[in-house]
Image 1 (cartoon, rainbow, N blue to C red):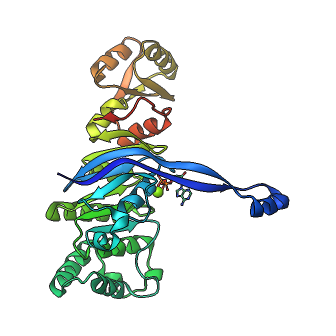
Image 2 (image 1 turned 135 degrees about the vertical axis):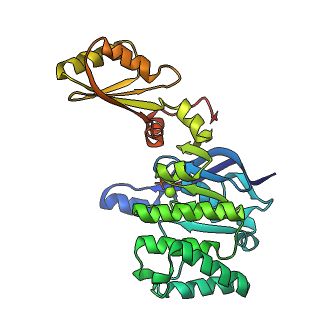
Image 3 (image 1 turned 45 degrees about the horizontal axis):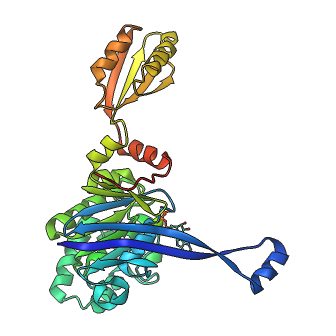
Length: 340
Ligand SMILES: Nc1ncnc2c1ncn2[C@@H]1O[C@H](COP(=O)(O)OP(=O)(O)OP(=O)(O)O)[C@@H](O)[C@H]1O
Ligand SMILES: [Mg+2]
């Protein structure tokens, strides 16, 4: 049984069209016109208990809008979200007991009071039993390193400190599901890693289901067994990462250093003529990105050795960043969802 079920979900916004200039502003007062924006367009998916799902897509794709409908802040224009059989926006009081939410761009904590007191307020709001509160606080403080700033007012925290405090607060009541909208945005590599470890640990030890949006592909690679990619409100891909790499790109890259610069452009031309991957040239270095299922590194080396002297080479796996970048750059897909 799935824990979250999203069916034919749609969200449209009305955005006022502003007329230009002073005259336009006056006209707007009396006759405001609106355009309709479809932020989420017929999205469906199911999430099983204990999954960590990455929900990714370019800016404006509709990620936050979907998350807001899943947490019950926004009401769908059409379609349905059900979580454990509950419709989020209709049963918010009951529902919030079951979920934890972190919006990276905005804190859920009280701005003017110390972190420790914000957490105490949470304790009363969620009626968290004493021993659970104590155990969680100790455990989370440990992994997230909260002790050094727990007596500081939230408004005085650095972004990384605030995000850690927010994560802790979101989990004090032991929610079954955790929604994270850009939990690592703007953080340094050490804090990012710390937060990833924390999310992983919570998922492993408590079977907490996690849905996260991010623009950081390392988050995805390190945390998610499944990704849902959306673009312009529609699902483009739903599946695992290896399959995504297979489907959307060459999954290997070779960097080859040649002895003579002049040979490099000749080799580039030859490789391009025989359609061996995507070739870039930087001085004496050739960067070749190719699909492993079509050709292997030995075949490429052999093809080059006939033309020029090779000084050195390395083979790198294609990073998911690269795959995703190409996917975002690709024209809109109309033939439906690719399921991996
Ligand atoms: N309250 C709103 N009123 C009008 N339009 C909105 C509103 N919220 C979102 N939109 C529009 O809906 C679309 C999707 O926005 P959304 O915030 O869901 O994108 P996103 O995928 O989270 O992007 P990002 O990666 O930049 O956070 C955008 O075109 C945005 O301008
Ligand atoms: Mg967003």
